[in-house]
Every structure is written in C-alpha cells, then in structure tokens.
Image (cartoon, rainbow, N blue to C red; front, side, top):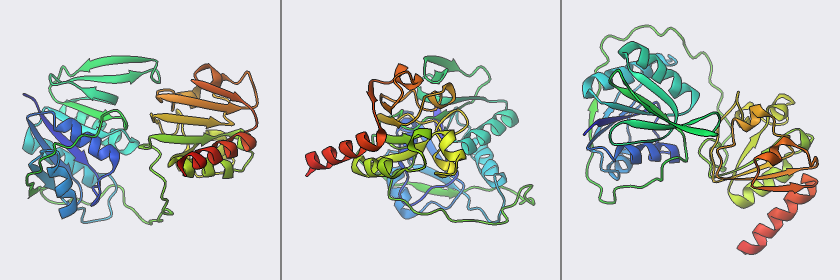
Length: 314
C-alpha cells in the first residue's frame, strides 16, 4: 500500500483543525510519517500519536530565512521516507513549497484536493467548485495540497507513541530571502478564516461598519471574511479577503452580507455547503448561488439574527 508523508511548516502544541484533517487522511495509509520544519513539542507528539502515526521527523529553523529552510526539510523528508504521497495544506505558502519540490523531484502536484484514495487518485475542485476532477500522478510521487473542511477529523482512538528523529539537512547555506522584521498579529478568539466551519463575510454594503457582522460572528463562533472592495477600502485587514485573489474557503455555512457576488468573490466561497446572502439589491449575482436569500438592510437583518441565536442558546 502507498506510504504518506505529512508536512507542516509550523506545528504548535495544539495542531489546528486543518492540520488534524491532514493527519486523518494520512492515517488511512499503512505507513505514514510526519515532517515538521520546527521542533515537535510533547503535546504535539501526543496529538500525532492519536492518529496512529508512529514516526515524526523534525528540523528546527536556525536562522531568519524565509522558505528555504522549509523547502530543505520537505526535500530531506521526502528523500528519507521515499513516500508515494505528500500531504500539504492548501495555503499559498504550502502550495509554493509543493510546486518547488515537484519541479526538483519530477513529482506531480495537485491543489484544491478534497480527498485522496488508497490507489493515489486525488479528487479536487475545478472551476471554483462547479465540477470535481480526479487526478493521478504519472511520474511517481503525488503532492496533494488539501483544502480545509474536506476531511472529517477522526483520530484513531488508541494512541501509541511517536518516535521523533532529527533530519540531517547537510551544510546550512545562506538564505536567499531573509526576514528583516516581524510584526505580531493581534490575537483573536475567532477561528482561522481558512479553517472555520462558519464564515460571516461583508462587502461594500457594510459601508465601513463591520460591527453587525462581528456581533453575528461571535454569536455563531464564526470567522470574519470580506470582499476585496472592503479590504481595499481599509475597513478590514487584507487577511480577511475571500475570493480569487484572497483566501478560498469551504465552510459548512457562509453568510454573505452586503456583497454583490462578482465572479472573483464567488470563486473563493461557492464550494461552501450552505450559503445565506443578505443584500438590498434583489438582482445581486450572489443570489444565484445562495441557498437562502434575504433582500434587506444588513444593519437590520444581522442584529435580529444574532439576537435570535443568543435567545435560543440561552
């Protein structure tokens, strides 16, 4: 049976939901190994063991390079394990690493993957979720960048122990790109946008006030998203942008408020399981893909929804 290698550029003591989904997918294969470009803590080892994975490779980043260390770790791990399948996150950084390794090792890379079968056939979304396609590597190793919320997180149940080994990266080379400054992001209790099961997103229609959306998001335990128009206007950070040039999300529930639904925005969210759209314009394109459409003022609709949710939970 094929062997799997799961790569994490960063692995905290409490692996995130998307990381646990990758571990679940890897655990379906007879042989699975985890590789991390950081030191793996005891807490993270316990999580890995919970998925029946018994081997992990690590190599801490000694310098301030950007990307080169992660590339070296993934390359060394692939050579050491001789894995048939490499599982990565679907974020832009991981996709770039996968593409560079694919060129270096003459492997095949598939992005936006939602599943990988036992015979290494990857199922992926095409045309923003309008179609699904099956892909198989013809060159050997398959590198799959897996979309969050595609795999049901399912630990093995009986945890064993994880043997952690240090990766030998050889002589360290001077980084081609260096980190010259670091700005710490504000800590939020809301879930990560790319991993959230519920997303509340706003666009030009919020007119600079994300207050009603944040209130509803807090009531639902949701992440906040935005259209490019809202981020370009400076109403919210560009980290929140959903769309063709932003983050692609696939939550269980996506609430679109004050977003017209241009094709670029649809490309980032139309694979959501259930879509609710709130817009004043009855002809807004977003209603074409919405499961439930509400024609109305978001400043009135969203507070009512948040109040009713809290009332029912009380």
